[in-house]
Image (cartoon, rainbow over all chains, first blue to last red; front, side, top):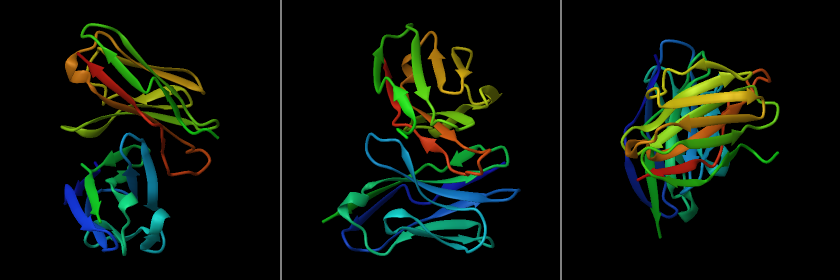
Length: 112
Length: 115
């Protein structure tokens, strides 16, 4: 079975500072990993995904993530955040039966 | 495409009443998923369909919950009778697995409050 652990529940950060959100997964099969963002009162939107190939994945809004198989991690980064990046971020792993297992989420609050 | 459409966006009902949540997936998508989001339990998969057929309903909490997909463009999640602990945001998502997509597209959600 697949599972996801997001190591930080809350991350406060100042505008224009870098941010890293940590995600570890466990999976006994091929790994497909995702980061989703949820803005207040909205549904989830895909930021980026890792399916295969290059371990550095670039997504929308300047986010990127690095897949590390040996450490079973898929951390999300952005070099310079904006106020508009305030949201909840979810890491997810997909199983062979197409189900997504989500982490508990990390709330990012960007302050001026 | 308009994306995944859910209705209503907000529902307030009294305990014991029947609640029906509706979802229209993206046209051409062959998989449909229902999730529930709460502060305590996070995002939970309730049930999913492939080509209108339920594949896995192991996440449905109990017999009070039922879901149907009568055709490729419509699905319902029904709670009867509703209880205060059912208060949550319910999301529908769809995916084009046959077309090679690995992404699930989420609707805006229905915020359910049971008093």
